[in-house]
Length: 273
Image 1: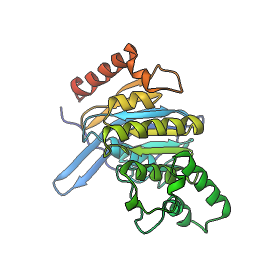
Image 2: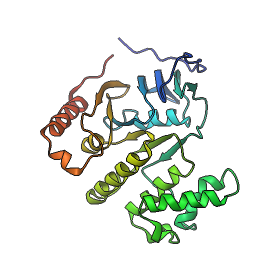
Image 3: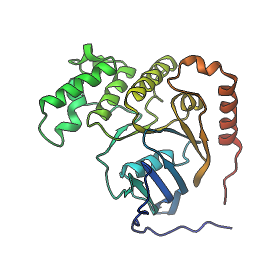
């Protein structure tokens, strides 16, 4: 039986008793193309509590990035509603910091000025802004490179700058779309450890898109698995390991058991029609 494509509709008001940091209710995304509608996300339902770090896994092209962009308000939903702290998302969210696969740093600006760029787009930079930027550069271990240009940095260092920039406005939500995918394996592990350390000190509500199952387990409190397009959430698994975590957790038999379960979910579970 063929699926029914829902026409775009206006967001509806969420229930008054909604207290989750992020909520998705019957969210669908359809792209309207010259050759007809393309359903990127069939239906997504989930809740994320304040301070939770949630990883999203799924096969390529299943709509993971589309889902994150809808949470950020950079893509409208076709139907359903997304709320942040109980308020419906109707446009770009100033309470969300974002990281992408490409750090997109401005090549003519210093590291410090790249971190401050989001502030400069909204208002004049104040002394407290500079203090926060300096603090963030210490957190990502780049203080000594504050006057360098992006071309003088390694790929991992550029992503550290992007992470500091995403945090400069002290967002309540951190959205990351495969930020480490272009890095080599060693640098990727180092960035994972750096992100885990920063999360342990800030406890930001986070959505982390990744293709790495091990990365998802190590970093997150929960793992959402999306099926093949048109996708839905087919698994919602809570990671059982306490924080803070060390790399040695990967030697735990329970870690490998969860890895194999998630891998099987991604590879073998059929699309529900």
